Length: 109
Image 1: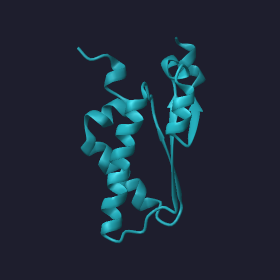
Image 2 (image 1 turned 135 degrees about the vertical axis):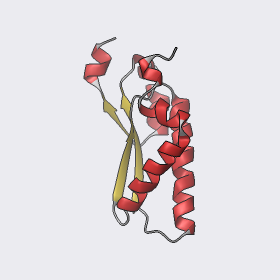
Image 3 (image 1 turned 180 degrees about the vertical axis):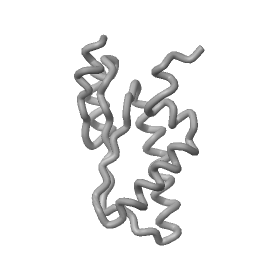
């Protein structure tokens, strides 16, 4: 049985990379010529950020090969919603450009 946190947010899209690629590609195209700030929801471990970044980078390369108008910059962030990431805050801040604190989610723990 899967727990609810395994079937939503970043875990859902990493388990179904085609879904994440489709979403990333649409965002990259929609933000052509503008800054794109992309926040990963419900990150529970740093490896999820690395996996997502790999998919994002692959989509940027794919679109640039076909001369699509890309965002002027891409900032990657994470939603801090689980206590385990608080203990890895230094590493987290090196892996992303920004963090949003989900205090209502953290309060549940």
